[in-house]
Length: 71
Image (cartoon, rainbow, N blue to C red):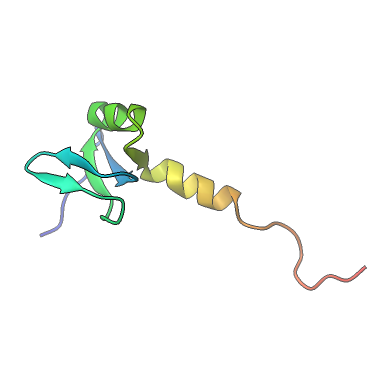
């Protein structure tokens, strides 16, 4: 069953273990959708990263420059 992500919903990636609803979330779990307000609380407590923030950080850490260039 496909999950529809609404405008007020964002994907979060757990970075620590915590209780969420009826279960536990762990750092090895897949990203999951939550409301923007819930995401803000989780992030403020250091429990998640926003998926968009995580992707932006990965892009920033890619090496820049030409491959195989010799001086």
